[in-house]
Length: 171
Length: 165
Image 1 (cartoon, rainbow over the protein chains, first blue to last red):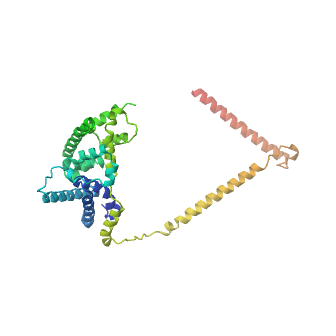
Image 2 (cartoon, chains in turn red, brown; image 1 turned 135 degrees about the vertical axis):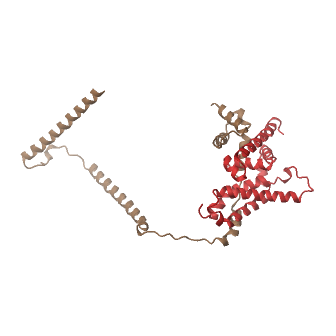
Image 3 (cartoon, each protein chain N blue to C red; image 1 turned 60 degrees about the vertical axis):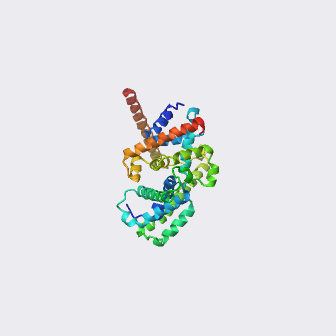
């Protein structure tokens, strides 16, 4: 890989990183901080990464996910006394403006996605939103392609089940 | 239109058996406004995914993150060595463009001038091309011979084509 340039190589990844961080943390402000940390961290390590990392995008996504998981763990450790089983309580992914713009059904689907376990959420995010291949997802998440496929299968089955309930009963 | 293919794709999508290309077909399909009734129920799902794809960070973020990075990266203007032939390239291009315009202009002007002069069909105003009648006769004879040769060659070729068919 050639020398990394911040503006042309790293900055264009910000939206993709933000969406992944948001999918994990479910908090816009936190996701934005994570993207900034990711970009700065990779930038500081650029000298050692040149020639070692095949895909800068995959590497950044991995760093971003790890940072997001760290933050989530720390947050959960701080809030042990609170019941944190549901992700709904921390669901600040949509700004007030967007909340108004999204109609009720899309908000319900959003909740379906947010209720998945973190690994399934990340896989669905990388596959269905970012359109990545199993191989790319496996690289980012440090899993085998087979595990990625099984995880995606479970996530989609779960979404289907809930989705059809919404369709049938408007739940 | 037959939507069975899309229905099969949706079914395979739920089973995580679709390829990224097939999933792209589904995304494009559900982006349409007129979805057939049996498939309409899946439109919201794909609309949601499309909306999620448009989420991003604004230029405020760029300013903030660049401010944190800029001290380490002063803007370096890289000077490149160029040979004199390379640096004269724009000049060649301009000269070539001017030459094309001039040539086209001259050509157009000439053809307009030709069109402008009407043909004179009056035999009284014809001028002799040759002063010597023998030379004139020779030129006419050569011309007719050439015509005959061309005509007979065409006839032979046409006959051959007929035979080969």
